Length: 168
Image (cartoon, rainbow, N blue to C red; front, side, top):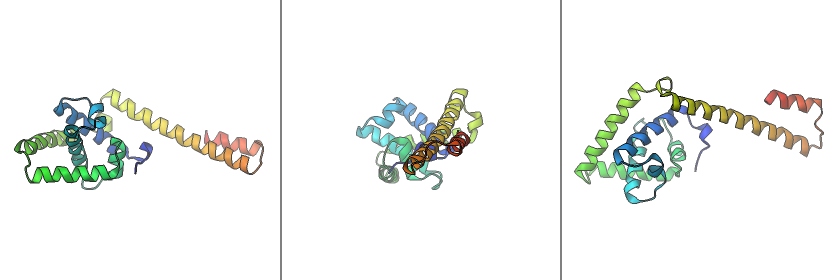
């Protein structure tokens, strides 16, 4: 199950971007490759992103995180489980050390970063996304009014025109 991005809280989007950026840098790969490449090695890196997002004690749903990653929520749950098993059993000593280093950097970024403190390019991107979401909602309302008018056999009289103007 995936959720429309406009319904995901902005702080979840920001923190997800921070997590992806840190993990991709540590893995020496692009953010796109981290999220899109299906190889096992990169799946483990995605599981680290899922674990980082889970560190907010349930503040962000697995559906939100999965939607941002382009994955199903069950993939997020499985990834968190695999991460926990690898971390707890210390599958590879280096895995625990690797994750701890990423976790520490992630938490330090969160303590200094907020939407106001984001670099201008990221802040601008989130503002554009927000505006696009508002336009999308307005267009859906217009579509609903037009469909309702058509189904009821109404012509676009003055009342309907005024309603459309108020939406836009």
